[in-house]
Length: 287
Ligand code: NAD
Image (cartoon, rainbow, N blue to C red; front, top):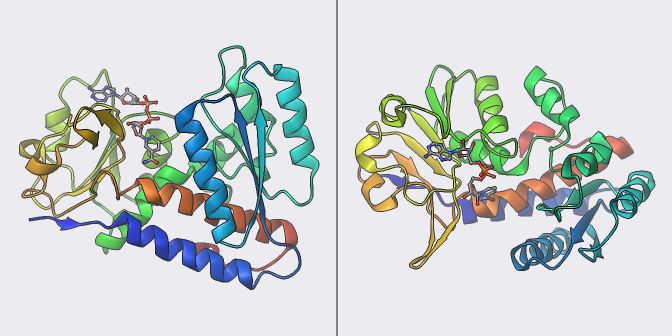
């Protein structure tokens, strides 16, 4: 059976490593501003856990809650203030935003050097061209998990299922940079099984419960399941875990796999931002 990839433990280790570097950070502590518009319950939970994680890592969290009726101009004005605030190293605007607000306009207003979510097109371009910037937290966390179980990534066949700007596309870029041969499958892919059958690494970021079955996988494949799907039987991933377990070489559970890595990477990016802004040496590749 596959080795279980313990994302919870890996995330805890990453958070501890961040906390240690924050404790040693000279002068002011790194700060993350989180902006929440409206009362979406899932978003509220995410924002609360991001703030708690900040505090636990010894960072400062600045929470900004705006009503869902907020004018776009007022939200943009808040982003401008956060861009200018020297205590703020990272800015995160929780998505989704209400319909009357143009999310792209808000994301592109964030200073790319404070964009710790890595959603700004400047950071997407930096990732695509190999320049230092910020990598979106979820695919970054996935790469860390893959690296833990695969000694050599170069030359491996990797299949990313899903092409979102937040997960699929940056995941593909990261794997290209690791010298994998990368295939990106999506909703219009004609024969997903054809691609999966030769994949040494599979990253599933689709949002369809149990889309990928064990009989579609190559024996020994590393399977990273990003999907979080709420069903009658609780949270399930995009991979049918029970059938994949005997075939895969290593696999992430849902929950407890990719999920916990996302916030840990957010803290890591915020620390890295503070280091760059203050000229404090942070061993960026080392954790
Ligand atoms: P998205 O809806 O933006 O993108 C889904 C992608 O899946 C699209 O590119 C689409 O082309 C592709 N797709 C849809 N049906 C398909 C099919 N039948 N076969 C192949 N591809 C298909 O979603 P997203 O934001 O990338 O998120 C994907 C999943 O990951 C969701 O379940 C989401 O909840 C989860 N997620 C988890 C985390 C985390 O922290 N663990 C973070 C972000 C997203």
